Amino acid sequence: MAFKAKSAAETKAADLASALIRIADREGAPLSIGVDQLRQSHPRLTPLAIGQTFRKHRDGLEAALRERGYALVNYADQGPGRGMAFDIDVDVG
Image 1 (cartoon, rainbow, N blue to C red):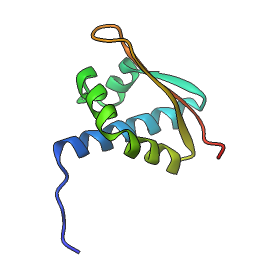
Image 2 (image 1 turned 90 degrees about the vertical axis):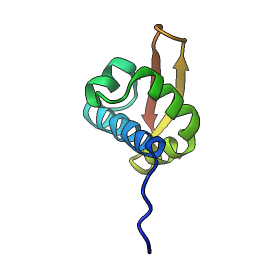
Image 3 (image 1 turned 180 degrees about the vertical axis):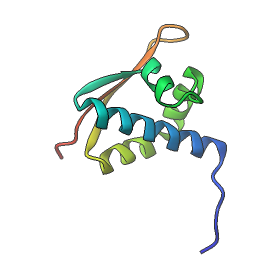
């Protein structure tokens, strides 16, 4: 099988998924993860990149969370400067 390089968007999606999982592993679910926590966990994730990545790669992010036993309950983006949050819970099904 030939190696296929990831695009920048795919790399950002993987970074976002790993940051969400690390925080959920550390804090325990259920929890709400804000943009500040994500930036502390992975400084390259800017608020703009987080929102764009989530909208473009939502299915992949949810699959990565599901693999670790978590479920994305809600995502809220109140607009520029107002913050965003991911609500994560334990996957029961």
